[in-house]
Image (tube, rainbow, N blue to C red; front, side):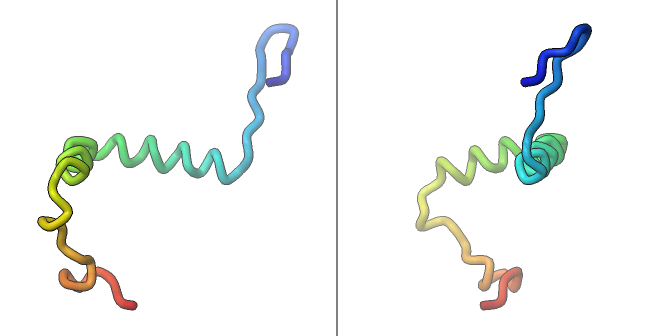
Length: 58
């Protein structure tokens, strides 16, 4: 943190700022957090691979 006479300034890396922006964006999607919580508490046997949905190619 850089102390100014009237305001303080915080300097972070470009990568950290990009991560913060992504988090803000994802939090703005209605229902996204609830969906994540649901997946995190569901049994792994219920998970579907992205390849099975055609969303990922290896």
